[in-house]
Length: 234
Image 1 (tube, one colour):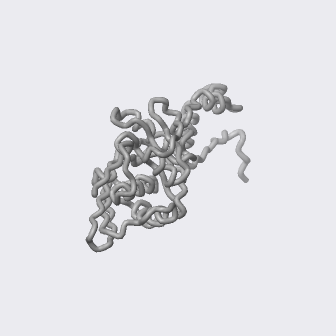
Image 2 (tube, rainbow, N blue to C red):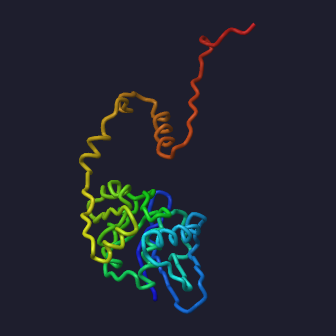
Image 3 (cartoon, rainbow, N blue to C red):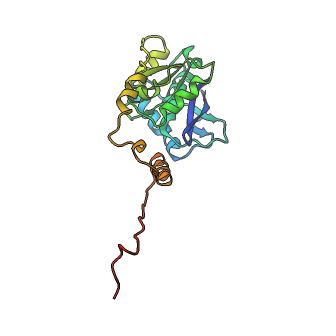
């Protein structure tokens, strides 16, 4: 049985759409194959997902499982694929039936006990989801919901566990979308004790500091000393 879900992968500061395809073939030798140019963190997701499924009260498929992350040429290098892969496994093995899988994109890392952990780039992923007319909302870990909810054009569904995500997609659990706190966030973070607007001139120095801060880079500032101020030699 084949299941498809929508998710996103970070490419720099942007998010690119990724389709998660999970195929479970009953009767074949038990084996899990993950393809689609996964990096180490993604390859390890199969172990996290298997234990999260079992520890959440579901059954791990004892069949041949093929997981494809498309497009294949796009590198995938984050643990945010755990939750969509787990939901895809449950749907492909007949443990989850839902029409919502076509309406919502899913991101999230899973612990071994099935808890949903926050992911990086939730804001970028929500912005990318808002640009797709066929995506109604984004299912994210509760710890990332407030960041994603900054985007007002998409429903952000917060889940704390794999079981909660299954309940939502199965229609057994109603979860209210996370409210957008855009105005509160601007009021909270738009006040600074130091402001570059108070500094006259020094445009090159201000630009260097801004770039270093945006990219979390180190910065070394050298102040030249005039000959009059330098110590006399001899």
